[in-house]
Image (tube, rainbow, N blue to C red; front, side, top):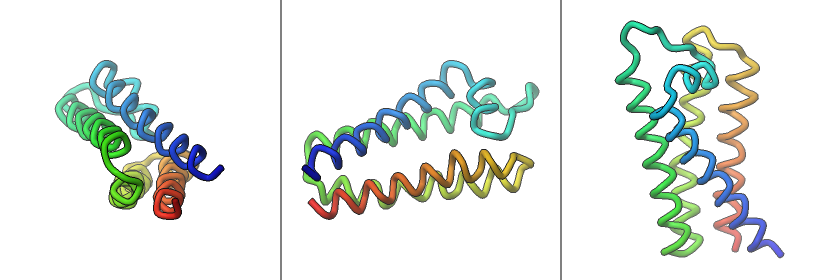
Length: 123
């Protein structure tokens, strides 16, 4: 019973980060607003593309690990990748974003990723 839940949560998180990466690449302005720190129109385009590529890469790597390796490798991936949403929490707080977005989106994502890591290590 734990295995389908574990792989389902990991797959959902991987799909979400992949979609977030694609959103930053395709519609960077609205994606930045959803991130919690709206972008300036006069110079943030490269950084938004970098974030999009980072998230897309995280998603593709996570999918490859989940598909072609065991749960331990995927668990280590989730554990390491949790650094990104934890950092995103601090970035949003430091740059004028709301606490609701920082903790309700980014910190909650980090917690979900850490739970996913723990579940992957448990199976």
